[in-house]
Length: 162
Ligand SMILES: [Zn+2]
Image 1 (cartoon, rainbow, N blue to C red):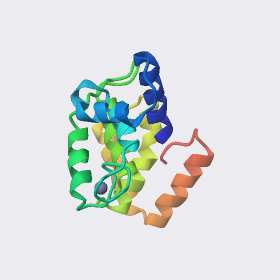
Image 2 (cartoon, rainbow, N blue to C red):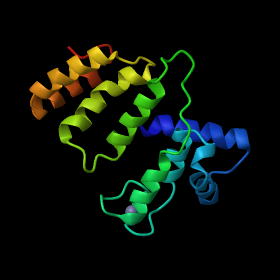
Image 3 (cartoon, rainbow, N blue to C red):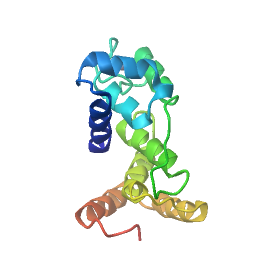
Image 4 (cartoon, rainbow, N blue to C red):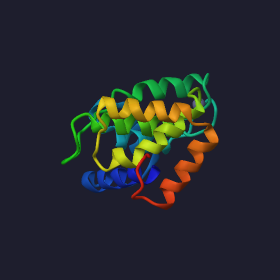
């Protein structure tokens, strides 16, 4: 998860000829609408929240500074990757956001998002019908069953959602 953001951040610094310094991250976070969301998220990871002391935007629900930064993140740009289905990048982004900041979101949804992520990252976007069918199935499973399925998929990357 963090690796995909880090790769994008490294490419951005190289392209701009910048060093990996907090000042650069601050500039990016101040202008989220000028950058790809992966770069904005990576920049936020480099900044410490002045209120809760955690990585900015990922603090507990109720931390004002984190909530604010989390809201601004959504001004960042979503660029569909070559070969990916239109809308895929948005789905990837929402899932990455949920997995990285699970506070206030049900355990079941976080697990389901994690399940879908490898498929999304491959550029695929399930149809609404497929997504709904999988969601129904996940809803009937216990959290323990979802976790077991997830670890199975991690060990066998080719395995899809049954
Ligand atoms: Zn905070």
